[in-house]
Every structure is written in structure tokens, then in C-alpha cells.
Length: 287
Ligand SMILES: [Zn+2]
Image 1 (cartoon, rainbow, N blue to C red):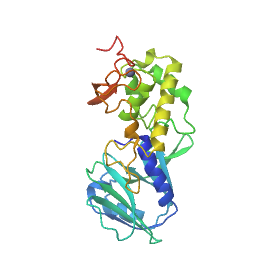
Image 2: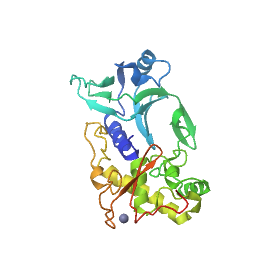
Image 3: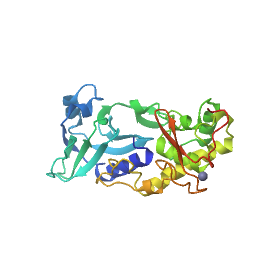
């Protein structure tokens, strides 16, 4: 799944190329792409026509555009969803699912999704803690790049949890935007094993971990994100290249950049965790 930097890359593209434009026509080519829009594809098309895209927003890994009618269109990128800006008349992509046309006759906005785990949906908007959020996003915590992110409060909340530190990092109701890739990278930077219990971490160590997560995601954003899966692309279809800078994620057997020991892979929540056996020793309590 794309994480915060990959989603932010797409958001910036939408802010530059879609905001301020009026939709004349929405075409759903595959009903599965709007399955989260419960009233169905025809309703989705009818409600979008005539609306202006006012802004592109993101919280954590969640992306949406604000519409002039007061509702929002949420874009779930899933495993392979892409929001692409394409000239009118450009050949349809093989996996084109939704096309939006605009009254300026300028480039179309296309939702392309090879595996169809992603999709688009219209949603009402609610106010939470001073921010306007689509209701399905209302429970998602602020991410470390949010100007209103309250790090001290998140440190306290993490330390109150009796859980593994990586599980806490991935808990989108605690802190959002961090997934498997950037969690592993942040843990390596502060030399913590993923199974360390949060209630035994000091407040400064927990703060350092959140700082490391923000730092690694900022570095990834600067180079267009991680294209670990070649399907994560910006609105022009280009991939980022932070995968070249990964220290542990996907690096099993390669030498740790700090100490030279081979990076190990361990099973974690049906996926994998990558870490350095010397820099990030397993806690004695974990088996
Ligand atoms: Zn090491």
C-alpha cells in the first residue's frame, strides 16, 4: 500500500492540475472502481457533473478532493490505483476505471487501477477538531507532517498502550500515514526492534522515533516517494526513487549501513519486518 509520501506526491499533483476546474462529465468504466460509493455508478456520475474541484487534501494515507457542492471525492489508491492527468484524446489506459472531463477542455483526470483494490467514492464532510474531513476519515489521527500534529500527546498515548512499538506506529488512530516501509526505516534509525513494548519506552526515545518517521517520510517525499511497487506513480505516471535509499525494508541479507551485519527479515502481522540484528536486538520479553 502507498504510504504518506506516495499519497502526498499525488495530492500535490491534483492541487496543481485539478483544483479550480469544473467537472463536466464523469464516466465510470468499471463498477468495481466505485463500489465504495453505495448509491452506485450512475449516482456517482450524476453528482460529480457540474461540480468544481476546490482543493486536494490528505490525512495520513487518505486522499480526497473538496467539491464546490460541499461534499468530497475520496480516492482510495489501494495496491495499484493511479490518478493520472492525460490530454483529451490520449489513448485509454488498459485499466482505465473512471474518467473526469472538465469545462476548460483541458487534460482529463483518469483513475487507473490494475488490481481494482482501489476506488473512488463521494462522501459528506464533517468537522473534527477544526478540520473538515470526509466522514470515513473522521477517526484517522493527524500525521507527523500535519502542522497541528501534537507530538507530546502522541508520545503519551503510545506509552499508555501495551503493544509492540511497530504495531503502535501502524495504528492509524494513534498516528497516521506510517506503513510497513517507513515504520521499518524509522525503527532502524533509532535502533529499536519492532517488538519492543511501548510502555517500556522512555518519552524521549518515543519522541525520537516519531521524529525519525517524519524525517524519513520527508526524505522520501523529496524524491517522489518509494516505488517499491512500480505502480506507485505521480499524476504524470512517473515513479519516485526513494527505494534506492532504503536501509532495511526489502534489504534482507544485505549489510547494515551502520554495522555491516546482514539485515534480517521476521514475520510480522502476515507481512515482514526488516531490521539489523546488532543495531536492533530483540527484546528479552519477545519470543
Ligand atoms: Zn546494524
